[in-house]
Image (cartoon, rainbow, N blue to C red; front, side):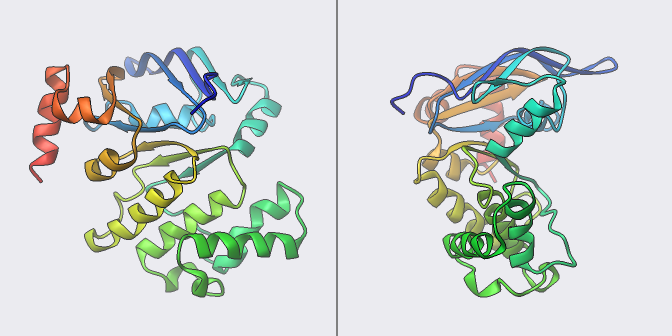
Length: 248
């Protein structure tokens, strides 16, 4: 991380639903190649934070700049940011009527205007990267949950983003499938990809994060390197959260 210019800059960002502040004046900087894990109790604003970064959720005040582009109402700016930001959700969101290969090539062909042969070569490369090249011609329903989530990761990578966002990517998986997805994410972290991951998988966080972000009631309560966060969190709420989650 030699480039000190943030690839993501959130400044005093708020998102309000009626009387509820999902985000309350949140500020966060992320450097190119930095890996950030966002954690906190349910309803603390974690998912809203990362959904605002590719405008799946709009913000009511403050500024968000992603890769030099300020996110606002201009659809051209939103489209430009989304081409650089991949996102993996809790649910896999694969098209059930398309094969794995067709799911992966749809974006590159339609958005990147790539030829079908080039898109298929790219897709097979990323299926190999997530260790399921043999599943290319199957339909999503023929795969396990862990395999479907790895397809979803490969699909995002096929757009060759500069930033990857993960919104609790293992929360919908059976316990025995969690590690196969986390292993792929650990490998991806090793490539230098900028990553922001909302997760309760603290073993993964210890292994890959450069920075831990702890949220509470729509605010960032603590930002710290993993070694400091896990050994001596500065806030009482973070200590309670870790005590509860590390017991399980």
